[in-house]
Amino acid sequence: MTRINANYLNLPGGYLFSEVARRVATFSAANPEARIIRLGIGDVAGPLSPVVIQALQKAVAEQGEAAHFRGYGPEQGYDFLRNTIAAAEYAELPVSPDEIFISDGAKCDLGNFQELFAADCRIALTDPVYPVYADANVMAGRAGRADEDGRFKGLIYLPCTAENNFVPELPSVPAQERPDIIYLCFPNNPTGTVLTRSQLQVWVDYARENDALILFDAAYEAFIREPGIPRSIYEIPGARDVAVEFRSYSKTAGFTGLRCGFAVVPKTVTGTGPDGKRVPLHALWNRRQTTKFNGCSYIVQRAAEATHSPEGKAETMAATDAYLANARAIRDAFESMGLTVAGGHNSPYVWLRLPGDMDSWQFFDLLLAQAHIVGTPGAGFGPGGKHYFRFTGFGNQADTAEAIDRLRGLSL
Image 1 (tube, rainbow, N blue to C red):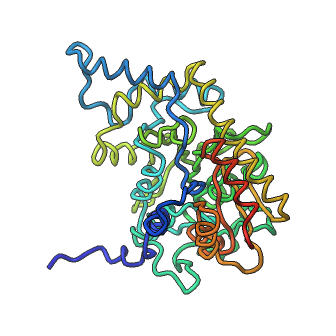
Image 2: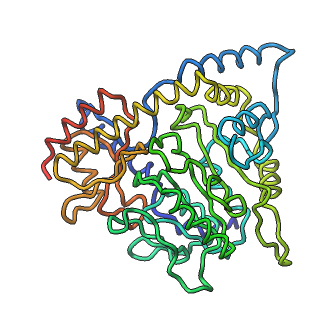
């Protein structure tokens, strides 16, 4: 008898974006003439930049020459990219190249990193939250079953609401139930909000005082334009001892199809072994990767390297500026309609508070039917998103402008 992992039966019925795709496909089949504009899933609309294409073409040509052919690469990533990232992104921060692990994307790393921890570790995450954080821990058996509101009984939820300006507050739980692992994402997906240096310092101090680990998702750091907003958690004193950082090339350089990201695992970050001794997470993650991962391709890593060149940085800035302009335009449109929104500054996401008690899936269907626009229901990010809706600035400028015109004609 083949027994399944019963924890998978505790997952929601479908992954958020799979359900979005299903509903869109059903609508498109019934309305083939409708031109649908997608402002939902965070896929980018712009093509790869010239410097990336040049790097890809050069690397492909090398693969056709015996003298330069590359087969299996190091599971941790090639030194040329690790050294480049350390110099370009962490030059003034205490991060060394051998603490950087190249991967095929931040989503994979964030889903996989929980494998290092015991099944009874307590997990804290914001509400609303990027679904992968919760779902990966459901699969691992740490979350249990969800209640009728969709909250998993084994998880500690940190509400992010309009009342607290979408800034999570420290866990208000008994000492014996304090979290072992805390997921933080800033700029935040889905709310689009950021933390100041002092606000992030509160979390680092809490983790140090309570022997907790922060898994910090910095996938959207390239969209920060406001001075004083930290782009890396390692800008905060003490973070090297309690935080692992994850970054991505997907939204910053259009690598959603190429797939590349990286995790920073400081050698000073530790967990507790069964004998009570401290165990470096760096060595454990290295062991996990060398067992289960064969490395990101050479061709893609050369392309990622190119994004850190002066030309690459200029092209990346131009792309992220365009997406930020779209997000601001969407935000401004909703505000002019008298609606309440967050995000749209330092972030490509706009988080809309729906009028009255409208449910986010109801709004999804209304938006698709009336305006032929696809967004992301807030309920897919947790119970706290039930009456919210996420829009992204990742479309092209013309489509975004047309979508805004359509939004103004909605009957709400």
